[in-house]
Amino acid sequence: MPQKVEFTTRDGVRIAGILYHGHPGGPAALLLHMMPAAKESWDEFAGLLLGAGFTVLAIDLRGHGESRRAADGRRLDYELFDDRDHMDKIHDVEAAADWLREEGFAADRLAVVGASIGANLAIAYAAAHPEVPAAAALSPGLDYRGVTTPDKVSRLAADQSLFLAASSEDELSFRTDRELVRLKPDAVVREYVNAGHGTGMFAARPDLMAELVGWLSEKTA
Figure 1 (cartoon, helix red, strand yellow):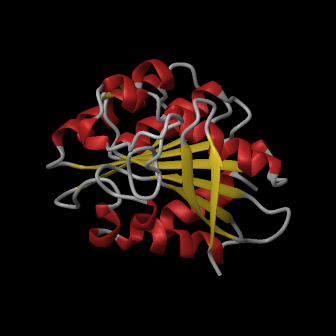
Figure 2 (cartoon, rainbow, N blue to C red):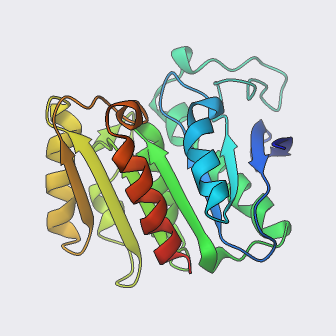
């Protein structure tokens, strides 16, 4: 059964997550939602990862879902955030990955998967942690509220793997994927038509979920 967990970022924000327990000693996946979604938007995908042997942690980024309390007691609301606040969401990702590591999951078997701004954050985390083997980005942008990707993709290690997906009517993300693959030619790129944005693509293209689970399994083996 999924388990609710909580941990605190280095700047004092309480982050809520859902943990799906997989095989002990197996790979782990950290899932980062898009705006205005929350951790539950990954439920179906998390179930598929669980079936493939992953332990999965989906978190509410600050200002979303159940991650609403700052260190000084203020209520956080992403709708009121400036770019600096959105950029600080990387602390949420760091805290979640640290929590998994403290629970015994090795960084070299951790995959980070994100949608929209979560996609940018997934790339940013992987770029700062060359031991992480794989990042997957659903509908990334070149710059979502100050969270940029070209500079981060340029810093990915040669042996780090990147999966990109976007739909053609989502012009920003579609152009972003084509720009990012120029910077990392070995990235896997999936282009769709009328498939939506972020985790919304899973409903339109269930084959994307199946392919991504297989890719993540291969890259964290």
